[in-house]
Every structure is written in structure tokens, then in C-alpha cells.
Image (cartoon, rainbow, N blue to C red; front, side, top):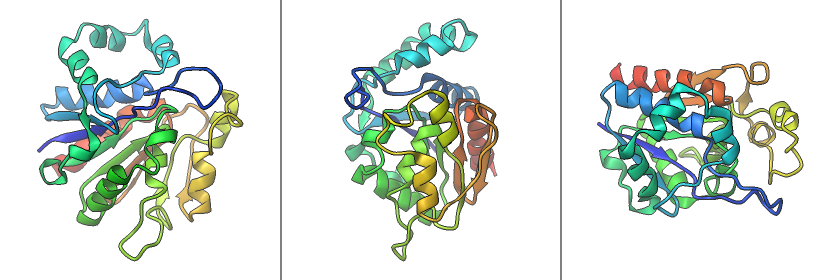
Length: 226
């Protein structure tokens, strides 16, 4: 049994000049939840190698015990500098997929063919797939066995349009995840801005925002131990 994190390789926020990448809390919370539960963890990304971290996500965490644990963890630092290239990953030895967010995934995980194929394979075989926040975009191009959108008629959540507007980036992002989920026929739900909200639909587990990271991790663990 192993859990594969699928992380972004994308580090530039369109043409805004600002840096983006992985939102650190959405990775660290489930990562350490799995490690502390004794579950083997692997890291991957579209390009392999180093994973870019959004500087704003560091600022949001830098005074927390979670960040201190991260900064004093040489094993994790090595892992984040040497992720496996997603195209080399075999689904056969993975028990669950977890996609942390950040704005980076909007550019490189929605239409990544290896990611889409993994998600479709896992959902069809009943293995858990979890997305947090913006990483819900990874579900948008996936399809059911009959060719319909994977999220059509399925209860899901992801970073809300109102949260994107609250951070002033609704016009800077290439698309809005909530809007596109609804356009594909998803049964989208949300809680208040920045409040935890986790939706479990069969083997699909989705979280709305950073505050939902722990709930997503707990749902994955529960599913794997069922």
C-alpha cells in the first residue's frame, strides 16, 4: 500500500510576474497525517524533480509548528527536490492518489494525460482519489467509461469562485474551478469562504480550501483502512 501525491511543476502565475506553485499547507497536512499513521508515501509531479512552493503559502504557515516540522525534516526536503516524473508512475502499486492545490495545478494538472489516465483508472477501480482546493481542476478533463465528464452528476467541491474573488485573482487565473465544475454537470457544494468543507462521493474525496486539508487526509485514511 502506498499513497501517491501528485504535485505541480508550474511556478509562474500566467503573465502577472508573481510566483506560484504548490500551496504548502495543503500538502504538509495530509503528508504528515499519512506518515504519522504509518502509511507509505510517494511524491510525483509532471516534470519530476523539484516542486515549486508558492511563497505566499510559506508566509501563511511560517510561524506554525507544522512549518517548523517541515523545515527540520531533511527526508521531506530530499523528497520534494526529487519527485518522480508522473509519466514513470505505475498505478499497480499505488493505493490512493492525493492532489494538493495551489494555483500551479491550474496550468499543468488539468490536461496532463498521465494524470487524467491515473484518475480515470483509479475511479473505475474504486481506489480513492483526493483533491484539495485548486487541484480539483485535475478532475475536469477526466472522463467516465462512457465518455461523459467524470464529475457529471457527482457531488464535489473545490476552491470557490467567491474565495478566488476574495484574494483578488478571479481575473488572473486561466479559469475558475467552481464555474468549470458546474459547467460539466457536477453537483458542486461549498461552505463559507475559508471554512473546512469535504465531500466524499464513493472513492472521490474533494476538499474546498486549505482548511479542508485535514478532513481530506482523514477521509483518505478512513477509506484505506476500511
